[in-house]
Image (tube, rainbow, N blue to C red; front, side, top):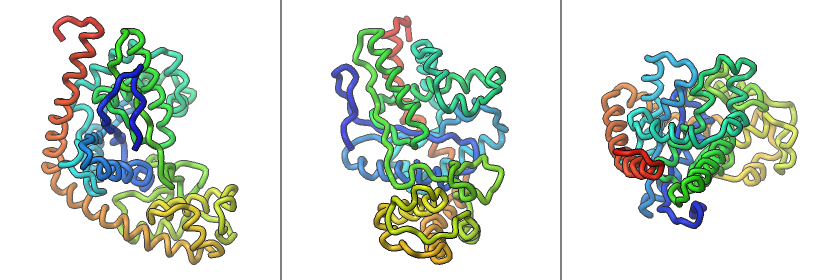
Length: 349
């Protein structure tokens, strides 16, 4: 991992932050595109004294309507997924966003730094609001400023994200730079997005041109992290493909989105490159490849599903972990918020 680019020449202790919305069930896309990399970064940095903070961003979730009972369950399920996948509360700080008030407090200041034009250009705002922007919540429009606060309240320097979130980290960089410039300080770092891995963007099992999503009306389009071995195998067996054999080189996947998606998933789960996988499976029909993928997916994912189920039966255990994580997060955030208020000129903060 390289050092983050400092703001205006300042240097900052490396720190890693990322989060996922608890707005529905976890999918294979969440695991391969985010959580597994969270675990890798935890293990890579634990012995180096670099803190890793991983959040359930429940304040982002309510930018669109959430059933309160479902939000509570989904937050716990996401925490269970984090832990079952390998995030260790003794190595990383695990917490839900709403328990640390400094996120919202810093977000207001960033609302006053960010420009309307910046927000209007955000791709996810356009996608989520669609043609009905006048009825979208103000929170949905402004949430990139809250995301910037999520990151910068901890002076995080590295943010592991999927490709679809890169624009938000770039906006965070713009906000940090503008704040530092406006107030003549070198206070906030300019964080770096960390985007890597064979399957940073996992696609639907029914349409290789669309991202795998927990909101897809078809459950067969995704692998849920709560699926048991039979469900995982069934969904892979029924995944959409084409009639041709698998190619021996990556270029042969260019116009074959479903084939490319399944090969990407196999490569990511087996910790190999696309080229290495195609050397092994090139020339095979999907009737041969799908059982290989099913066996691998079940071996990797079923233990996570089982541990998630165990944790969900002990919600007090999850809640205690999140409370402890929030206490640790507040300890980091408090001096950053205090200094921010002083820079802005707020008395008695």
